Image 1 (cartoon, rainbow, N blue to C red):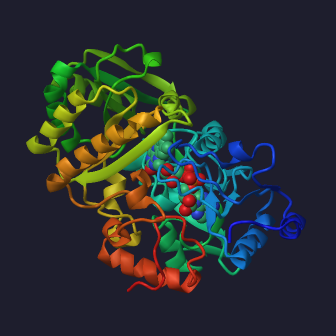
Image 2: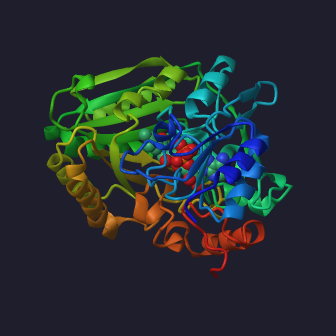
Length: 465
Ligand SMILES: Cc1cc2nc3c(=O)[nH]c(=O)nc-3n(C[C@H](O)[C@H](O)[C@H](O)COP(=O)(O)OP(=O)(O)OC[C@H]3O[C@@H](n4cnc5c(N)ncnc54)[C@H](O)[C@@H]3O)c2cc1C
């Protein structure tokens, strides 16, 4: 069914305290927009929850009317899983309280919070939860898919730091999942996505950090890229866990005032109070490949965490792919250099995240997140504004991903995938999670959502074996 009667809408409005928007309402188009402008879905109704008590009646309403149900946190999901054509969007974005317990170093985060809310609340206590690198991203989608950022080597994924989650199940039951209560559900939430219920809050372990950290970027022009990649390969072999590095190739946006040619940028963050040791590591990288320019120094954590925001504005068109490698072999570097030189589209590019450290120390089966052994995860991201460019930009990202496939581990990070992999009409979740984790996820799915109410995600079909 696609349309609701006035009576049905009135009934919904009586049951929830938040706004209920349909196409005729002011603000409906703004409310249905997600970060990726390629995603232009038209839900029948949007509920902006104002209280956690709005969640259960909204889920029941969607079930009762046979409406597809999309759960939205920050709306950053590139595959568009924060919206649904002809269905109901439950948007939790107004629920963003963050409560920090500095004594126990735990942080309770309402599920509609963005990373900006989390960092702003923890930084004054000299604490940080490991989250992603762009502050408008939602904590919910990030955590439920994994969560990679500047503290991944120091403290693991966002999901690795999850201590508990409160959620509303498909039957409207409120449950707390942690290491002792619903432990299988708790396991599934640490990478298995939004398949199991509507999370209303997350509790995380926080770590002492800053408020200033040593961080920065080393810049290399195109003629220096092979040298820079060789340096990154050598440098990352012996790095302590406190050093996380991300190497990016992109054509810089004009605001960076860095010229029109693509750049290679080695970014790093040092998550240790031993500043001298971090500076010595940066010096080692400079010795291996002297940069053409650099910005390195002490920076406030909140500032660092939003430094990339202007490069990733809401409302661009985007298509991403992700893959992983055991090492930066000559074959891989050859493709990275050639593809980097080839594309001249502002904003489009790719990041290579150095993994290992605390991320790699988590046993493989402790979470559904794939391949903990992979040393490097590559995200290729196409950005553009003109719909006429859709085909060419998507082809570039796909082509590069396919060219790298022979050297890749096969593991993929669901949060960095475009629609056909991570969308709710996804191709093959077994390939995303790996056979063993996938079968366990199916078991959990069958127990908590046997009717697949939560299917607008990288879907785990409950009937699969
Ligand atoms: C500019 C940009 C930068 C990014 N940077 C990083 C990064 O540094 N590191 C990283 O790991 N990822 C990063 N990502 C990817 C990001 O983690 C995913 O896109 C993630 O899905 C975003 O979460 P969200 O809540 O904003 O998304 P939404 O679109 O709101 O939600 C995505 C999906 O998550 C699920 N979900 C959301 N809320 C809930 C809930 N309360 N309960 C149950 N399920 C829910 C649903 O399936 C939903 O469809 C980035 C994405 C963008 C666009």
